[in-house]
Length: 99
Image 1 (tube, one colour):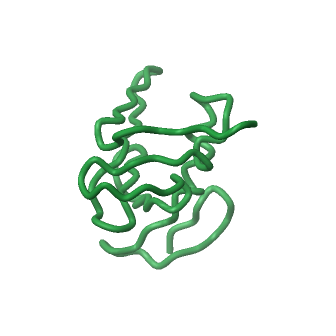
Image 2 (cartoon, helix red, strand yellow):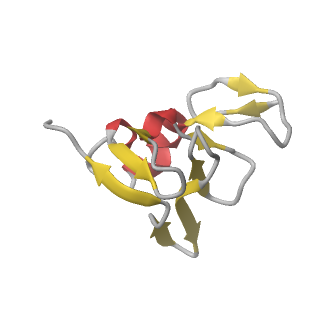
């Protein structure tokens, strides 16, 4: 079983994932806003949705959010030796509403 940051348990396996809400903790360390409520467009299929609806496979290296429609990678967040890298190439845009 895998435990998310909010205590939700999931069975381990290649197809098991947490929704994008599970990435709120790691992403909040970089952003003052809740990024999971931002709307983004998938560069792979064009789908537009909030990041909370994306898939995070917690056994991956770092945080990798994938599109819930086509499974294309939306963003990558990796930390090593106190440094962080954020790759947003899978997003056509990231839109934050009024707040």
